Image 1: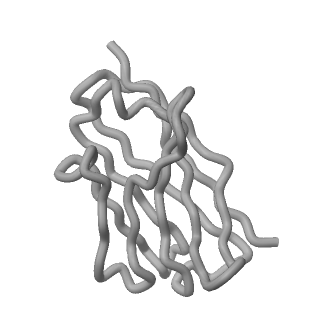
Image 2: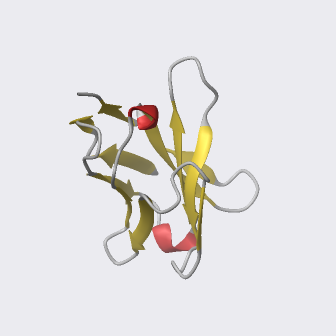
Length: 117
């Protein structure tokens, strides 16, 4: 059964860094574009970053440009989100998504990131 599992979240002070991982099992990640989303309490889920299947192109939400970097290791079936210079406004549950065609997409269960002093 296809599964995505996020890890790497936690509590960090403003200005700190975290690296999130999204490990896939039961599917070949290289066949999917990958997204990271986040959802803060009381807010809609928003797309944070996206990367193509080959990892040769990526896009970012304006709020994280220059601070977050999405990357992937298809050999390890894993996608990463490096988050630097974190701000309290980055506090949210972070989800990874594998995007194929049509209904072929999968979500992880999410990992909590809390930025607070």
